[in-house]
Length: 143
Picture 1 (cartoon, rainbow, N blue to C red):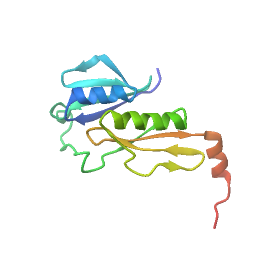
Picture 2: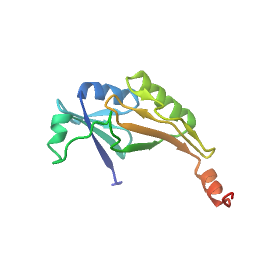
Picture 3: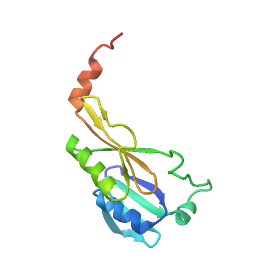
Picture 4: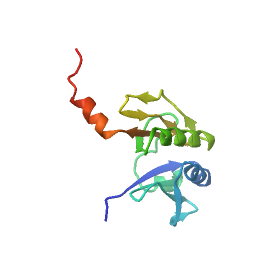
């Protein structure tokens, strides 16, 4: 079995978060979803568990961060192409998120943009041409 990751995210409104994650390409897994949480599957190995804040609080002794006011984590997700990066940012903005919360990054071999979900969690979709990246890293640094 491949190693998987389940990213748990506190949200204000599970139904709104579920609709948002469906809009950016995730599929609801009803086996692990209910009134207080939705399992949103991005790929065979990555799922986002969106949990209402009170339910989420039961899993940690620490206070929850307000992702609108502080950065808790940056979630970088790979995409198949530059067009896929652009498409997910557009879908996120159309579904109630905020697109391009920072300037897009284009390093030639890597292209990245950003968006926030409605609860302020920051995503950084990116496309990287691995061969071009390795070639760029093999070049001597300019003085």
